Image 1: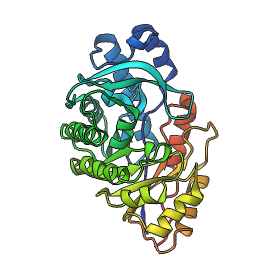
Image 2 (image 1 turned 90 degrees about the vertical axis):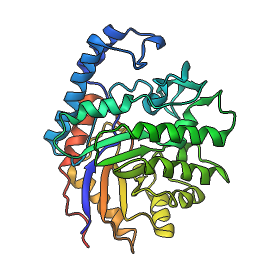
Image 3 (image 1 turned 180 degrees about the vertical axis):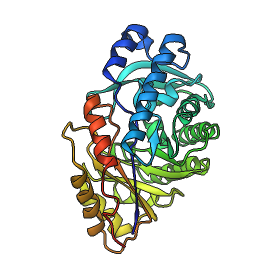
Image 4 (image 1 turned 30 degrees about the vertical axis):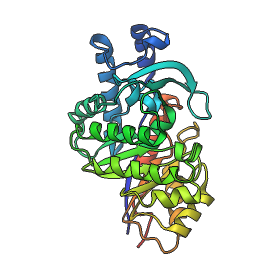
Length: 331
């Protein structure tokens, strides 16, 4: 029987009280967003947000607990937005939705900031077990950014991968690392670039002393991109079975997958709350439709970040996910 591990890709919505309080503390303009230098009352507010996130996950019974990324004003572009070698400029659309982030423009050599590591250090003081780190994958982070320093797409991707690897080297002990790679679906690399993207993910994963999941979402990977991603030395690949179940099943059936797998079976953008039985049925459907697979670990997860949702809806989805039947896959 596969081990079912319940988790999320993080980036939770702010509680209503925090939206009001932080709006008053930070202001309402682009220049008022997080840059890594905040302190005092703002830092205290985010610490209370973090505590609320962690406490809810643990009380619900999730197997992996994330910090929650409440400070990430720029969604998964955040690690670059707070880096010294980066200028944040105009507001640009976050993929194909109604959210926006500050364009991170790299103007000098990238170096780790320790920002994400500090968040994890703070979370680790409250997490009993199962701490999970969340980072953008190198391909998606490079895709969301603009290079005005390295001058070559390949060199820039390598620099972003090195930047993330150096950040990971400062992490406290974590059980799992989710590398979020929506750009592999939304803006897939072309010939040659797909191999470089896989190598960059491999370089980041190699820096982690944890189980690494390369999590993709908002559809299914193209066959060549998926085949190259399989070459990366990650422990699991994540599939969005909310947005596209048929093509994801095809990729697993045709090309296989890692011994472990992450299944996005809860909708991170829809307020309809799936019950534990529905989630279990979705996990079992994947197992039934991928004959010949024998997953050691199944990470049952929300498919996308959840900051799109009202706070009460995301919390209800966490509760349902944590309550899922762990015996849904038979050997």
